[in-house]
Length: 281
Image (cartoon, rainbow, N blue to C red):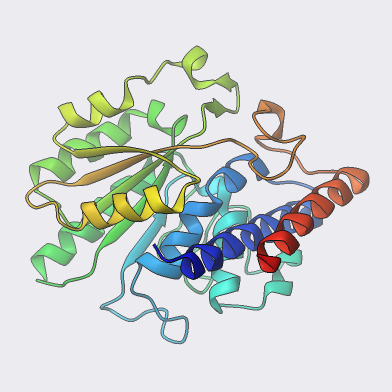
């Protein structure tokens, strides 16, 4: 990846973090931790990987994205706003009555949202259906779905995985945000999903494990996934929950709560400092 392209993606990821924290702060509720850990994934998908057009959000030939861990939609909304689906300032209406930006994605209200999600485990099944439809209709679009490592405790995830492999959905790429924490604590203590890679291999997936904050690794993984034939792909992205905000990083308590005024100021100071440094490079 060229230096200028990587810089642009790093800036996009930082702005996604700023937007996500702003949304949660404005709502006085929400889920910042998992939105921040996935910022690089959102940035790469929306600014490099997917064939999408904010001026034509329902284009039948577009690539599809399903946020299976729907509670982390502040990150998705920030990416959509940066991409031009709606004004960035609208993030401040997150979870407000009448807002298009509710606490979980709503495909009937929010431009750019391909599937309503929120009940964990269900989004990936919808993504499988979209991928199968693409195969049956002989369309070239690809389908991407982001899951949490806590979410894969849900049995429906593995039913979907079995379905995807059975139907040879090589137009489907799953990403597991492997930040190690879920609402009740470390994933290894709640249900112990490891080895995640071996489980997906057993279900018939092409599997890659990467640093989910490294754009070179992210690009290499997505490029490889497009070459896989006859089976679905999964990218297991090792990340830091709350990435980018010092007091949120690796802290399970920031799974689902909003910063107060003082905490918000600290977060904005840190993120804007990071943005200024990136823009000055």
